[in-house]
Length: 203
Image (cartoon, rainbow, N blue to C red; front, side):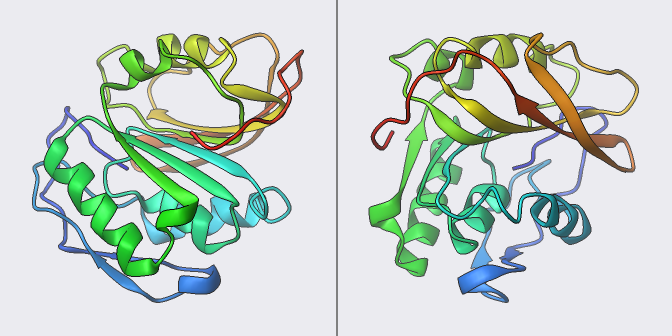
């Protein structure tokens, strides 16, 4: 996380800093790629303060993972498992290397795939989902809808980042809990109430 297509962003800074949990202050390399950057520290700190009681023991799904800032932060803060989905093979390789550096390969998996194609596969439910699609490509709403195909635990928590100028339409069972704005980005935290499936095995 995260990648933007409009307006263009600078390349990655070269390092991702874990800001809390077991790996606090660890620095991990980020590939140089236009528009690739970690979610800002301030936003991550706010988000994970909201998720204090949710993250420990969670099964986390990080879609459009990019730098892996949110998935790796969740692992640092006690997530039981994580699945990071990233289309760019070079960025996905760096994510795997960073998982190995932290020694959490047994708890996490990187999937090199288009997110919508991944969500068309056989679902297994997650309790915590991070969704940060590229801006202005119309991806937020179809991804949210696809998550309801069995990817969400009944009481799942979903964090969605979108461009600030529009509010996304989300499934009826998602209740807005908190939101944070940073520049042209708004992050919204939803709590799901529905008929979800029981927890499953690793992705």
